[in-house]
Length: 147
Image 1: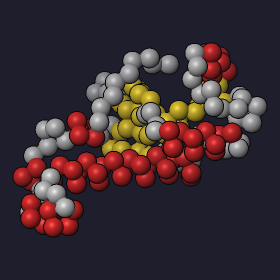
Image 2: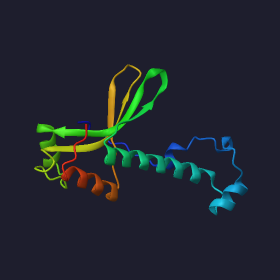
Image 3: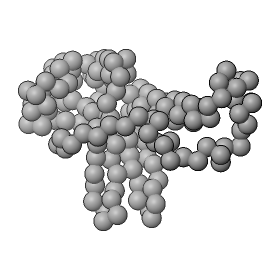
Image 4: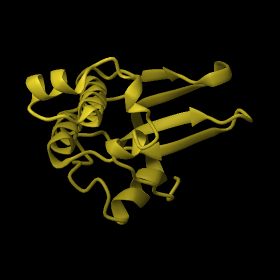
């Protein structure tokens, strides 16, 4: 289990994005959205896309595959924790809302996994807000299994 944690906001992703490349005029943005920030539109669209991806994972047990450069790829999925790994997470206070009996002694974490240039596999957990986390744990506690 990787304990390194790195967080960023959707605005951080657009920090170096050239907003002049957007083919939408400030006046149109101001008229339709009540403000003149193109970056807000981009960030809102990105956040909504990630919300839809995570909801699809929670509801339909899918793995979302993202193509990267040079034939590499990344995935967003529900990673299972079982056995000693699950026991360790529970002892450290994680996944305490998961009922170990109804979940079949398995916990899950929404995870981003990707290949490096040297074809090594790296992964980072995706932390959910309270509402999505409650929905995810409700599905797990009702016996839903992710693979």
